[in-house]
Amino acid sequence: MRWVILLLGVLTTTYTIFLLRPPPGDASSPAGVPAVGTGGEQALKVRISPLRSVVHRGETLRLRVEVWNIGDTDLLVCKDLARGPCALRLSITPLANTKHTGLASDCVPYEWLTHPPTQAADFTKILLRDWISIPPNHFYGTMVELTPGEYPELLFVGHYRVSGQFHSDGLLESYCYYSLKPFANEVAQLPTKSWQGEAQTNTVDVQVKHKAQ
Image 1 (spheres, rainbow, N blue to C red):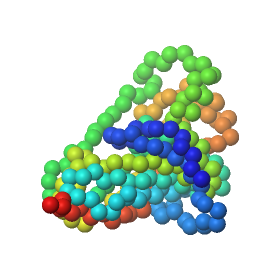
Image 2 (tube, rainbow, N blue to C red):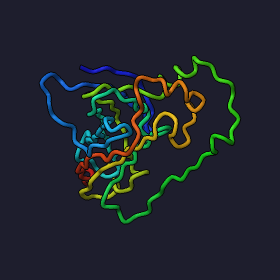
Image 3 (cartoon, rainbow, N blue to C red):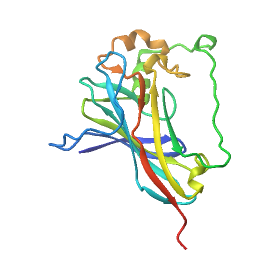
């Protein structure tokens, strides 16, 4: 059964986001390294899989990303897996013998900023905008694109391995994410807690081939 939640921009492109549960009788465990967050019982796995394991030079590599709740309680996970309160960092190895570029960013501490007055309705609005609750044995997913501009390995013929790391500091402590800072009391009263920690994805093999003539 599939529920289409919304359209969300991840990295450089817009994709469909979905919240799924396994079909009845499917007891398969998602690939990935189990990661236990705060509270001990808040465990999840992050699984990636390529839409095509073979791409041609210069093509974009598309990956399906699934964040599985393998714990016993509902978990709040950020909707945007690549920006804001969460960070999904993907890597391709071995690195191609070419120039690589990276992103460096910083933010002004929360205490240095001027904050407008907030209302109770703002808390619900922000929570629904930025976070989603995943029940046990369900996953939240999206599609992500790796472009040759960001991953120059896709310009070179060869066999590669793709893996990633997912990180979240939760509703209040995420780096540069201040939207819920004024609502610490409301966050403390939520029946569902946000997942905090780091999770390694599984590793997938991809091949880059010459374009067909």
